[in-house]
Image 1 (cartoon, rainbow, N blue to C red):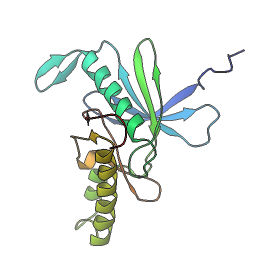
Image 2: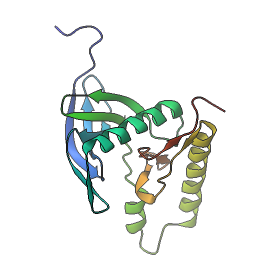
Image 3: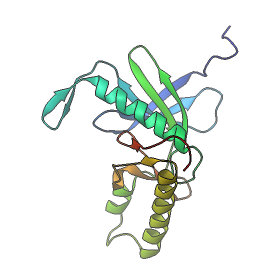
Length: 173
């Protein structure tokens, strides 16, 4: 029998995407109805960044940085929600809200003739609101690009990937 305070088990599903430091998967948490996104970084893996190799410790540091930033930012509708971190023997797994609408880079490419002005205005309002929240809480994202701007099930922008963020202070200013 599992202890009362044991973390629920999770199962990784389909690969959602891959970056320099991590691979994201669809994730199913035991006892939860809604799926999550799991950002997985393998410990000890050597990475090629800018033509040079670097150790996986850089990637682990990026995940830890993202964890700290998201803990500080919790609860804003335009910032991806954190559900937890699992530190395992061979990897770190960051569990986050699943933005089912994909990223704005893919959305822009799928829009022949470009996105509609009303949609662009709506997305910009969400981006500005999310970044204002970050800045009020002492977090500077430092990697805003279309691939890091996701869409939730309602088409609202959710800012993600805080691995390069600068945390200027703790708490609200």
